[in-house]
Amino acid sequence: MSGAFAGRALKHGMDAVSRCSRPQFQRLRTQKPAFKPAVRSFTASTRAWEKKYTEDHEWIELSSDGKTGTIGISTYAAKALGDVVFVELPTLDLEVSAGDSIGAVESVKSASDIMTPVSGKIVEANSVLEDTPGKINKSPEGDGWLAKIEMSDAKEVEKLMDADGYRKFTEEADGH
Image (cartoon, rainbow, N blue to C red):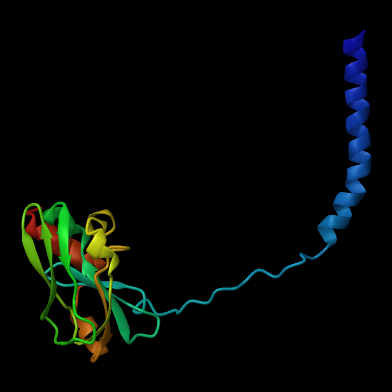
């Protein structure tokens, strides 16, 4: 008997909820949201956001202003190096030409100079890498970036490989 009563109460309870909720639901559905979502705008140009790569396995990613870029080593290079144990960061305000050494990375396997892909002035170095050089292994094309450069000639970037070109380059180097 209690089961039948509970079933009837549940049935009537649901009808009551349906009757009460429906008008309120209709009213809420027609109301406009109290806030307006933020709209983010992005450049339509892929050039500003695309990473470019060198044959020495460095990359550069242009900032939205198109005048500065972030430099790092590729995932391919980080894997080839093995566990990074020391990073020599570039000096701030250092004027460099494309291909100049701006620092070094040492791993348990080897050491390698870091070459700048473009000419310009070093405006920032990733000082986090001094205490945690292994960040290069964890995120070589993200948090493991090495330096930021204010480019003197943005057209130099156009001479570098895009991601597909770099992938093909590394596959050929591996003999695939």
